[in-house]
Every structure is written in C-alpha cells, then in structure tokens.
Image (cartoon, rainbow, N blue to C red):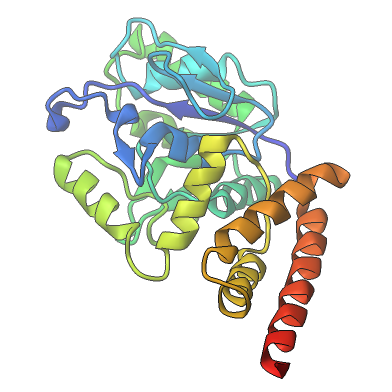
Length: 280
C-alpha cells in the first residue's frame, strides 16, 4: 500500500460566504472538514492548517504565519509536519471527495517520476489543492519562492506548480467540487439526497458520528432487515440488525466477517420462522 500523509488547508476568509466558518458548515449533517478527513482516512498522518475545532478523526493542527496570508504560507506550515515521502494536499471544502480519489492521487505519484500529480476538474482545469506531491520537491520550491519574493504571503499557487514536474489524473467528476458560495452549499446538500446515493451518505455519516471505521456489506444487512420484517413482524427489522451488530461486537472484535456470520445466522432463523408460518 502506498504510504502518504495529508495536509488539509482549512483556513481562508470565506468572503463569498460572508465570513462564515466554512470548514464547519455541514453537508449531510457532517462538517465540510470532517467530510474531507473521511476521504483522507488512509493517510499515515493528517495535518490540518486552520483554527482548531473538534473533528471526527485525530489530526495535527498548525497555522500559517500570519493567519490568513494565503494558500502558499498555509501549505508551507502544513508541509513542516509531514513525515512521509509523499503528501496529498486538499482544500477543506470538498464535500464529494472519496477515499478512492485520494488513493489514486497517491498511487499515481508513487508509480511515476513526476514531482506532483494534480486532479483535473470536468472543465480541464488543474486543481493544485486536490493533488499529491513528493515532499522534498514541495518543500524545496516553497523555500525558493520564499527566498525569491521575500515572503509567501499572497502569492498564487501557480508559482509553485509551474516549477514542479507534474502529471494529471481524473479523480472523478465531483472530486474537486468545492463550496465557495451559499449556492455551492445548497447544491451539495441537495445532491447528497439524490436517490441512489442517500443511503451510502447516511451510513458514512453514522459511522463517522459513532467513530466506527468498518466496511460491511450493507446489502446483506438490508436483505436481513427485509426478511425479518416480512417473515416475522415489521419492528423485527431494526431490532434484528441491532442484535446482529451486538453479536458481531461480542465475537471476534466485530469485524466484517463477524457481521456477515451473525447476519447469516439471523437470516437463516428468519427463513425458518417464515417457513413455519407458511406451513400452518
């Protein structure tokens, strides 16, 4: 598995949001920052540049000096805490970024000779804050820019990327969708409730809220709930799935295999129950 750290830039004035606390705004009940941290959960170390706040996952906090001086000072502050040879750099307002997109950036970097890998949005624009960089070239260019200009404050990101050997990847149509305006926030909140995605969004939100980092076969559990509801009684569905989770936690630490085994036993019981009722 590719090793990498993550730096999340979660500062800025959010002028187009009227100065609102952008990283703390919620989409699907989760803050924008927590959504980004969830997508970055495969990182070895996660550094957040911004104001300290409660987060669903542990992070290392730091700030640019002076606060609000722009993305390059923020990136330099975060890079000082990176330990891995590669770092994925993300803005803190990406509601639809997925772990697969983060890993694709890191794996593409590891598999080639480039010093950086940029995500490209649907219009073909480079996204330097949805990107992976080799740590030493990144630090080198930041130091050179600071020397050349006397300070990194207010400098555009393109001054950094134009000095690095880059390649580009498509991380998906929504990976680089960011929330700069209230209209963006409204669009993101509406999109996650679209049919076909709302259940996955809800399950992810619940797992983050409860501190559960476990991948389970939700289809298996839904089938079990359906069988319990139809074969026994409607209230049996939520109670049965709760008992399956409890049994899995009691047996073998509650991993995916334990959940699957408990669900198999409960489904077989529901089937026997329904068959008896049908035979009467």
